[in-house]
Image (cartoon, rainbow, N blue to C red; front, side, top):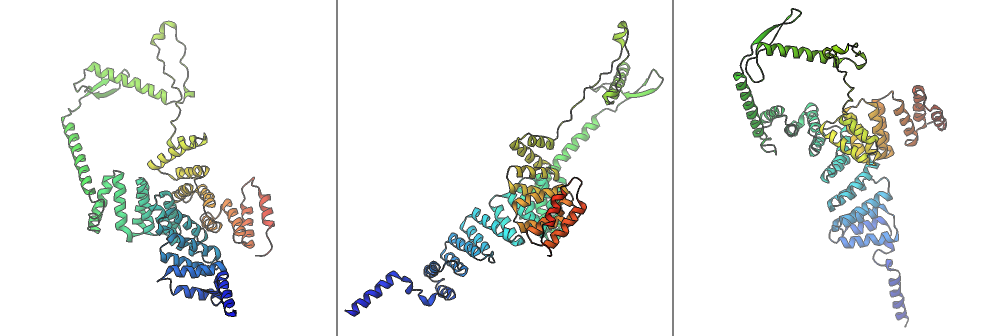
Length: 501
């Protein structure tokens, strides 16, 4: 009877408290659980997952257990589940932000490109100086067709760690955007600063020149490739470029031959001397538009017409205010009076940049975007890129604003207004620590700028909690503050800083 009761109690205990078996009290140490799961993770990942999850249910929140779960799910082939647990590791242990990289890579391998990009952004927010991850993110964005995002990331990487491969990647992205002019500038930069990448840069440059129909420069690149890198051109997608250049040369030669033949057939012009009323002598051509010789009367009439045209041109060239009305003539002489017409003021034709700016000012944002894109595709400039950045921010397209601002500052690195716009955009895209590194870089570029000095003063306190550096920069700003600046508010901020460092 007692034996039957003991068996019944044991069975009940196993049903109510399943943790007495399997992991048991002896496996409450996470290191022992990890060791036990590790023995079967390769041969039986399901069993490893069961061991680890049983422990996690009893004692949740252990980053090591979650990391092993991530590896176990990865071993099983469920990469999205693995990514979930890698992200949990980063949440549970702020020092393990590297786990986000494993999460991003797992999502990328699973085919979830958008999810992988999101996790990459999360990681780069925490680790902005990881240029390797920045380049991986840029390559992923490129593969997903997010060209502007990729350009922005490659630009950031190149700014902080210049390399020929990165510059070539940017050039190729501009070729994807059909911006051959911008692409050629990047490939030319590679040839100048990174000669070890010359073969790839020359291929890219040839592609850009062919798209621009600059066949004379393309021919020079072809000659260089054949001389310095035999076989590279023939193995590339541009292997037919020499044939296209040869066809262009044949066309130019035929045009020149036709022009020379026409010039030979043209009769030499004979000059006719005409004596003016003042006694001066002029010469004029003796050929008419029809190719026959003019009569002396026709030549005189032509010279008179030229004099009248010149007189009218002189009047038109004068400022309107300088034209005086002709003196009154008797009624009988009106038909003989010469009246020089006063031209109406001609309004200047607005440029494409003016049109884009006018549409922006009028609130026609979609029209303005279209005009800026057309302008930048045809004739990119730092001013247009900066304007486009401002417009993109207004339309809440932060990624496009960042890419545009990076282009503006790259093309005109000495322009303070463009630098300030870049920092404005960076504030909306980057985490505080990465933003501070950008402000420091701009402070080095523009050491006397009060605006950047004040921004850096605020960053030293808000991000670094370094009251000493912040106070010193506040003082520097106050010593250089522009007239009519709200210095009282700045002094109040400075004086509110705690004493010491």
